[in-house]
Length: 148
Image 1 (cartoon, rainbow, N blue to C red):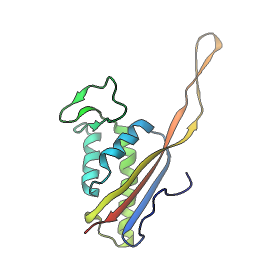
Image 2 (cartoon, rainbow, N blue to C red):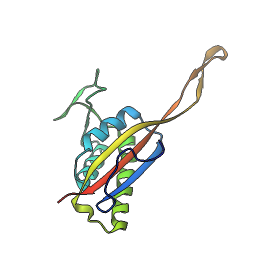
Image 3 (cartoon, one colour):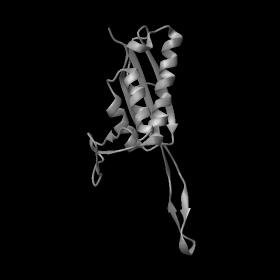
């Protein structure tokens, strides 16, 4: 991933990009689906609730053998991924403030999670063997725009 996948008007939008963040690609995809289209303040509040274990992230795709959570259906509380995505959203908010835009009226138009590089590793096993123990990384792209 070399740049942004989506285009936006530079006069009414702000962007932020998080590269090769060591979080789960599956959970980051589900979180992005949950907050896409929300107002920025709502999304920040929702992610803080996920970190505090007060709101579950609904799992649309990776939900086999996942217990139902109150008011959500199958869901989990991916705290680490929510915290990292929250950092990228706050970076986009500060970019918007720097440009002189009104952050309160902005909406998350683009929130995507794509797989980053896999950091190779191994775990020692019995009898001198080893098992692959790789670290997955994620690229997070956030674009927020003003909406009237």
